[in-house]
Length: 449
Ligand SMILES: O=C(O)C1=C[C@@H](OP(=O)(O)O)[C@@H](O)[C@H](O)C1
Ligand SMILES: C=C(OP(=O)(O)O)C(=O)O
Image (cartoon, rainbow, N blue to C red):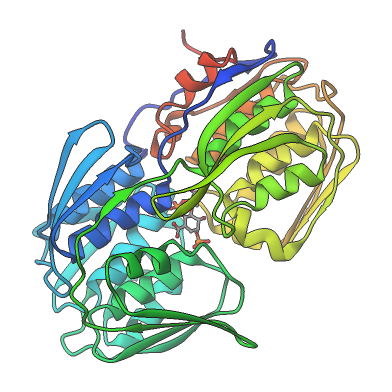
């Protein structure tokens, strides 16, 4: 949600057992990519289960501005009539990507090798985030970027008229940077090669192949070497978006820390590049059954049966960070309710998300009575056991949906209520969060009610 709306203060209180079925919305990463790749294909792509969060709606609007026809037929049911690789029109106005790093970085990549100019902006959170990580490799294709100091939005990208293919090693673990380079490579002649030292979510690779691009991935000593052959004709697809494991994390973690809970979260993606949180929770002693594993829409999915559990702190392996990068805020809440210490290292990327997530969680948890240690790349939470966290604070969400939802999950299991100053950003990724959680029996409400 952008900073234009009024803040929505919210409060969560100690709740009775959570019970029932939690149908979380579609995956945000796959939803953005369905719209962008649909817009770059020739013909009509159909999407079901699209996440209708503000981040994705902003990408839909952007794709219309670049000339694609994007239509909503019903809830989650969308079609995109694409203009083909290299077919983007020049937008007649500024592209506002709201709160979405994924939206703006992928779209910059997708337009950077077409001879058009576009200006991008976002909300107060997005306009603080670094864009140089994307514009540096896009410059190698021949695109030019004119932004604010430090490579911040608003920023104008002048697409390359004669793009050249690139070979680029991504310097930080980032699926957004990898994807921006691959999308730019689509309209460059020859082969674009992206090397990632640490594997990150692979939705772009899977979906580019699904849309008919020639793409190979080789595991080498350097890391994953991804080779894309440019200027394909992308074929429209039917995309069934699986449910988002990053959204599922909230009801799952809530059920683990609210005594007596027993919930089912069906059809959640278990893509190995996304399921690090679930591995971690099981190591902490979580009672999670992965029922009915199957393939849906080209992704492995399972139904998660989750029961309240007494958990122990662990050391999360740093090499797991990329597969659970968005889940550290809610993991730190679970860690506060575990016995013993949870050590999260190799997490400095959290400092450049919608907020500095290490700082936001550390300050809010401390205000709730939890002892924290942190450094640039580390967050350590000293657990107080199930029911042991005092709570009783109002935490700042810093325009960050995951911070807001994490503190509201915490408040379900603390002695005194936990409030957040602004729950409005939740609508960016999980617009049905409040109804879904109250449907399970959680006491989460807007504080002004
Ligand atoms: O590619 C994607 O869809 C995403 C990649 C991750 O960001 P980074 O690439 O910046 O790590 C993640 O945090 C974000 O929510 C979604
Ligand atoms: C980091 C996130 O998103 P984005 O980078 O797209 O804003 C997120 O959803 O947690």
